[in-house]
Image (cartoon, rainbow, N blue to C red; front, side, top):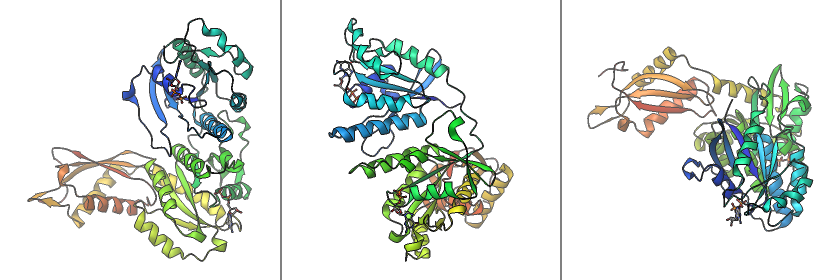
Length: 440
Ligand code: GDP
Ligand code: GDP
């Protein structure tokens, strides 16, 4: 099982960041900031009573406008429900119950994830009565803490550990392929997902039985299981004026982190835009395989060869570009199986002898670079990871590797193993040579 995740949600200024830092012992060194759009979400690992977990500080943008703010907090809550094993809802004990708290609690109550209400800023040991008004949120007994003074944090950690302790083993999703449908607003993501769900080849499972949440949709395509990641976010389509891009971006980021493969939807009537390329790169960075779906093919005059050429030029992974129309049903039934096949490719393991033969062939055909009379030598190769594939190759001297040659090797490998659209990591590791390729 992966490290348990605890999402910390709440309105800005209630003290979430202060609390998270307090809970991990102020050890900022373990922070791994992730690239966000307008904010950084921090993930900090910690441990209590032998239970290790990661706290995710969802941050929060102060949108000023009360309605937008509430939307943002709701979005945090939904993300928490989707990906966390427990949720800590932080409220400000000094400010008291605020307008959005009840609404937030309502969203959280609807999930299967344990929720702990934390009343922060209870700075004096006798402040415990300030929790009274938060009982009404219907999320159990609130815990009073003072993040700045460190009061009550032991009780809170006990409660978190207890909540994680009875964490149900996740439903067996291992053999299911996790597919994310991402892209700019209005390219037709929702329409495509609805078209998938309505197609004859796709059987939508009864998700009521799955413990995690109802945010993903489990489907069966030609007898194989797939999970459409964050379909709720798409089907509901809550669009807040002015913040659409922000949410679309955030949603895509979260989705690729949880997916094996992403269908990057583009609007064919606009061609492949810079923004579409950026979405694809985001999937790549998350280690997620991807293919591009040129939707709205029914109304386009775009030249597919131009689009493919642009993609091949701009995206190193050279993902496949497939035309489709959610409206007319064109290629709708083939997209999902194609995405699943790609995920399979990314999960494949190249047998070591075969990989060594392959590298040796490349070396023989295109000799590696040399600098000042010293030639790059490649020794033993082995695949050390999959989904995405990762290969380690022992070399005599890493300084001799040129960018061009490394790309050449990567591109040949991508072609040979049909990894178009699959991130491929090649680690060159220094070694004292025994088995070498090529001749002197
Ligand atoms: P976030 O926006 O929810 O992450 O809130 P921050 O952690 O940035 O805290 C917002 C403000 O509340 C800061 O000025 C903190 O110093 C203050 N604060 C946080 N925890 C406490 C607390 O336990 N007691 C008091 N009095 N202030 C706190
Ligand atoms: P999303 O924001 O990416 O989820 O996009 P939507 O699914 O909401 O679609 C945006 C708009 O494009 C809607 O008006 C759809 O009716 C329209 N649309 C979606 N797919 C197609 C398509 O294949 N062809 C055409 N002509 N319009 C489409």
